[in-house]
Length: 246
Image 1: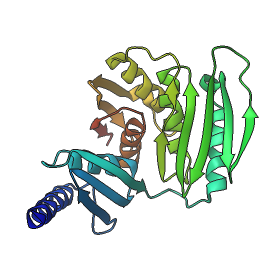
Image 2 (image 1 turned 30 degrees about the vertical axis):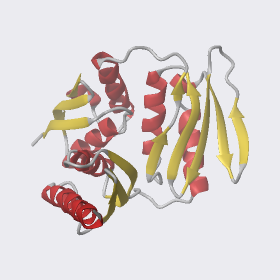
Image 3 (image 1 turned 180 degrees about the vertical axis):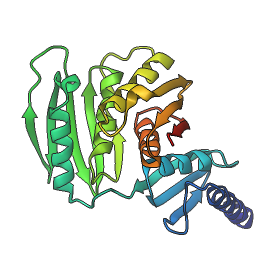
Image 4 (image 1 turned 180 degrees about the horizontal axis):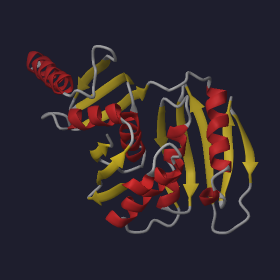
């Protein structure tokens, strides 16, 4: 029985690695991923080159027969290496500057202490708590609606030193989700990115699969737009059909 289990584990890990090696976006030679497998659960650990690579790796791994769950310890190489305090400050500043989050109390947890940096004056209101550990941003407590949850997660991903974002925010008044809500969420994030002309990009969402169509000026902007779409909570797949203007 043990030999059978060991053989199955070896077969699953081999299949996952082969799937990742075939994907050009996932560079296992430059950014190796450590893997383990136990009772259907696959553990992925390491760093991916960018958010899209991390998400695609997760998607490919989940599709391998025998994988029934994934423990996600896969982070992203940050654009700038920063200490946890600097990352926490970056998230704080982004949240305080965002009008759509004004009706959320904002608290920061650091070194076992919680500091309230803003009290929401309106009602109903959310109560967000942010902490950072080893570059991983943790978002906890509540927001008023799903749009705020998605916006908060994306803004956290934009902080240069963020290696991962764990969005545990609970929605106080959960409404029925649909394709239009997802489309609006992705479009809003693109519009907030001052390095992209969102007016040239069409967003289509179908069952949590987001398709991007239109024009960008550079390959870098094409990749940036895809990362932005992946940063939105609940997105399962991004199809990037953006064309670079020549």
